[in-house]
Image (cartoon, rainbow, N blue to C red; front, side, top):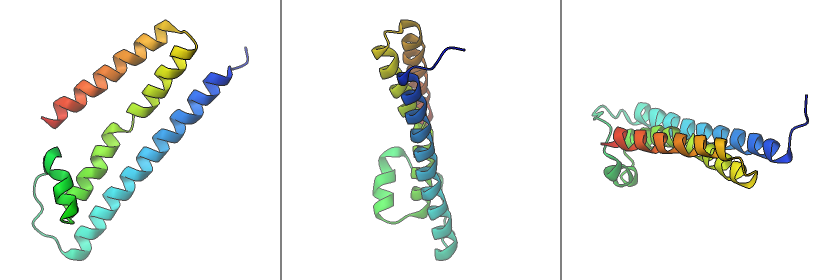
Length: 117
């Protein structure tokens, strides 16, 4: 078994940290929105607002928009580890895994755009 390179350790640590951070922040927003909905008795729950309206709705303290923001953060959580991997593979001059990472990032971004339409 060959020893791991420093870049592999950094990739693993940063990817793990960014995933944990994204999930934690997302969970905080979702739970806050759900608790706020329960406390305020907000009964007029509407369909998730569009991305362009989410910030405006959050400023109006709409619990549904806060939950939507949490879900949005959860959707973009996998992107930072892929970018970290791309940087690491670029520094290691590993073209195969860099290409795979770029392809995966393009698929995620395309899927995100389709989901927002």
